[in-house]
Image (cartoon, rainbow, N blue to C red):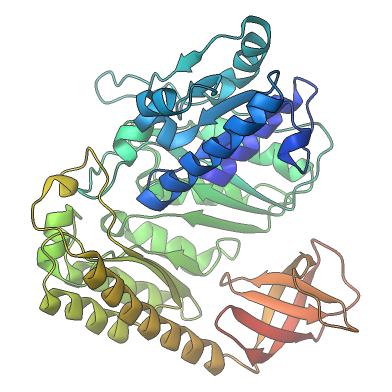
Length: 435
């Protein structure tokens, strides 16, 4: 979501005639898009803003703006600690960036825009203005938000505070955007939402099931691959699983956040499912879509988590064998219920538990990938690999299951090719083109 937000910001800045530069010293405008999911990115943001203070002293005309979730949550502290910042905007105000940059250049006064859309009854219609970029721009893969905010209120999560209540875009707006992207050359889209499969509950047009939206997108000429993130386990319905089984454009990859393998911890997190309910969705996906890859999110060290409860998470991970996982030590977020608890887990314990979980999941990922050596997958070529061996030209792409493959060959971005895997790694595969 933050990547997509940053792309939107860049497009709005391009409307002012600005272009991207490689070094801070060359810039006339610097926007810092921030995250508040954990404390570490907030610390990095303040550190970077400290560096920009020196640059602003050397170049007083420089306009500095802070955006994103940390801006929404801690704008008073940012203004106090960083008086060299010209404006701060919240998560729902991206479209105001051009006007704020112009005003900051002309009047040289601090500007603040923080309002989140109000919720009137069950319907929220105020969604951010979208910008598709300059005409003719080709983007092979694109993120498309279909939903903003969240209504789940997990006790560890700050998103409902930073991004507001859940609100869905109309199907017409979504389909028009994706058609426009397809006409410009986009072949793969990833639908974004905090709980993306709860899409369509509060629309003026009436309830639109997420599965119905997927099928409508699959009808758009030029779109060959459809992905989405992140779904909520409790909101998985039979029709969505059926779409995975029957619609070839919907990729066989689901990122299904578990968070913990213990029911007591899940309840205290306010995750509205049990481990058994999660397993039921997991195994149904595995049964209905045999070649599916399932990845997850996991948190260790939630307040009050005992050693036995942590061991439950390890047992579930060993049983389910996720293809990969994003794994985190719990980070208290001020303003959330979990942050106010007195039974916080010591940092050393959280680090140790996280290390054990990473070691286990990495082993499982390597075992799964090793089992897939020798298989042939459809790969969409994305471009040259980041690291090139001496004397070879490696390209990279993703399988339908979302796994990275590096390979040699005379290919072009956007090509759909068949690649046989010949060597496995934690990050994916080396492969050989067969067609």
